[in-house]
Length: 133
Image (cartoon, rainbow, N blue to C red; front, side, top):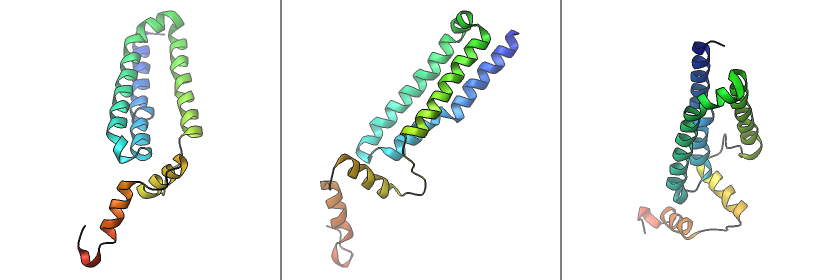
């Protein structure tokens, strides 16, 4: 393979990561974490995303020498397919659900009946004559 084709294919892998698996971690965290956990979860997602991208950039040349050009792209494709299988099998479907429904499902799965925060929110909703308590 010519070096130009290898660089183009490596850029294609990084671009597909940027529009596929890369932002998917942020989407999963924003939809599946409670508000109290979301900031820490998004920080972890950003760190994992940057570390993964950096790892690909730092190891591309040595992996190419070790596996060959075709082996390098097969290696990356294997991880991409593995990530897709993981997301399809493990990550819960959230389309068509509100954040409240997701939070209720998460609380039910964790065995949480209700929290103090939920009770405070209900007091705000049930306040008489529009007066917030």
